[in-house]
Length: 209
Image (cartoon, rainbow, N blue to C red):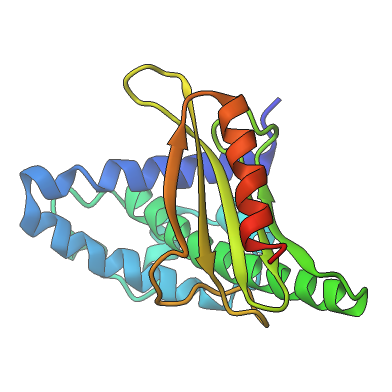
């Protein structure tokens, strides 16, 4: 059974997916629609987290939300379906919140690892299983900020999983990305065994040095 949170997140993604194709056929309408999407997202800036955003979405409706954000409904372009605009705006705000929540989670992990005198810290782990697309794991050296990033993606042509590794430099105190070239460029594998072997070697090279 789909939870209320999952239903909300899915609706927001679909709203954004409905919005983007407009730029291909009616770029002027798309540009005009971005303004109310941004205005509503800004109006939602006071919502503190994703759970509160879901509650706000469930308790409101498209027209009242847009009016509250100062959006002139009759002035919307013909493509401006209020539900689409609302959902796309909630998706934009959710992405902002997700980035903030991920940054806060990384900082807390770094603080705990330093307090425990660990050499490395697991910054992120996403996905149910490493063999399934959506899996992502990032581990960073607390001394150098060097990090090993592994991820499982979907090959759009074959439908089979692809496995990637790379090494990057992050800010050692926050885990934030730095505007630097990768320490080791991304490599992609089709064999999970080859991927795991290369990942072990990369961890030894980057995190144990």
